[in-house]
Image (spheres, helix red, strand yellow):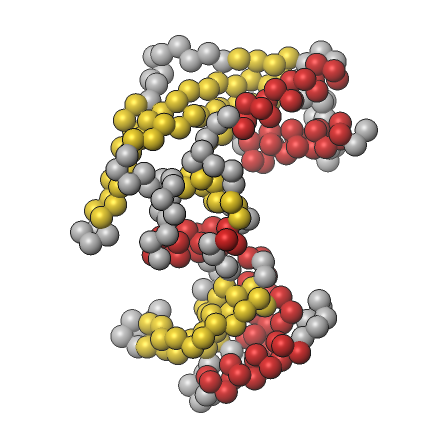
Length: 256
């Protein structure tokens, strides 16, 4: 991938000037499985595959496995000079990794590893080491990003209430220019913000004010269009509050 990766979630890669792409197009969630020293890993893996292929019920943890990888050599975490034979167990969803790992440990006698790595970090690390993509890597070229900072105000917020009118949406928009590159042979990395507005500059703060539901619908429509035209969206607690409130309010309006 030659494009600049701006972010990642458990489901999507966010690429500069492109629609979101599914992470599954580039990466699959997995953990490592290996055997106690007195077990033969070839036989243990073969028996696991046979049980997995027979699993049909959704209640069977083995049915959450997407693929069982080939046996490979892996350096021990505790003794870096020791080589272990392991195989990867790929799951259908990233959040299946911990429970399938526990199942193989408690029910099938396998040791497991790398089951507690947050999936976004796992995917970014693997994509980087396979030289597919590095986060915010522009390959030495200058890239311009459109930044949006926003906040909402509600006068009827109540804990547990989902249908909350959004009275005010305030936002500011500006551009930054940055460039970055890496040299893995020399282990050199650079990231420079070339141009960014200072606090001394007048950056307009704009507001959408809703006096009734019709104005609110129009304001929500306008802010969604603004969201689509920006590369990075930021603000105080927007993931835990603002984004959820906007999503909940739009969902309620569309269904009523």
